[in-house]
Length: 450
Image (cartoon, rainbow, N blue to C red; front, side):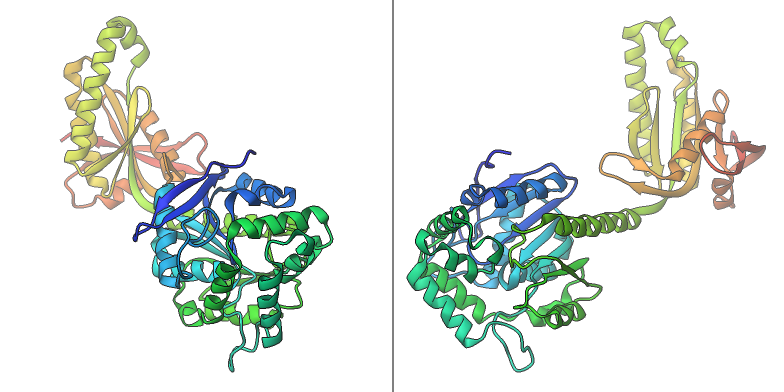
């Protein structure tokens, strides 16, 4: 994968935010790293590029440089959480992502994601909080974080070693990447990464902002599927992870092998095994939530092949165009939704079975002047609405019921009959039938013309 092209999104105040989009997985993932970044320099270190290629294999990935860092506009002060939240929304809008999985690292990248997830849950499919932390310095009721000595050591390294390739090992240790601290290539890369990401003053400003930030109060208001993740890093005891998970409704906590703070380095297999399990469960849950009760109607032109041969291509095409026009008009009249053409028929859904049956009856009569006759079948059951189609056992049953009907007949399942009692519709018992590919035997009914 080549380095993805950088684009710019305009924030609410006019700030230009650099972002990239890459990968072709089935879900969108917005990745927000901790601290500072540079979109293009990331890709220059093979291990980092390997992580992003792996992520891009399971998702459409969106990344951006925070304002004040990387290729985004420089600012006079570090952004606050509210501004960061607005910037996230601007980037998602520019990337055309309506619902995304948020992946944030640490107290800063993860904290930004946490606030966004709590504020705009309708835009968030799920939240992966890597190296989850609600604060980076301890508090009386939050005993985890960097000590004063550790914070001063970080400040000193920023002042004295920022961007220095001869001190790349110190920079890597500072940000919790010990597994690559002895790699000369990594040392040169991290020095360039920081030189290009921001100035020492900019890095210190980001550091001071997050030292003063505490996201604990918003954790109980996060109502999206959340997994909080930690590696086996002694700087981050498991009690802190347990504390965060206990504050987010329904969240789960996971530990994966490794010693690096950043997910980019170390053994990626345990990380992506966890991520793929989590995203798989989220997608399954989404499918369940998208499952609704609907009446599905299928229609089919009887002897369409022979009719097309008799009419000829031009007349048949004109007939089909008129067939579709009539169908869509009637479906709208009976408050249904046209779903798709099946070649010589159609599929539609209705929120009421009586309307589906009456629509089918009207359609049977309306197409006769075209020189064609149809058959139709209806069933009420659970269906799942996908991006481009309808799925579920309810769809299969309706299609099979339609296939059983005779010329100019409307057939219905027993479910439709039972749900239309009192509607004035009359049904004639058509017996029990096996429906191809559908379990059990089904009692079907002919709808008696009015």
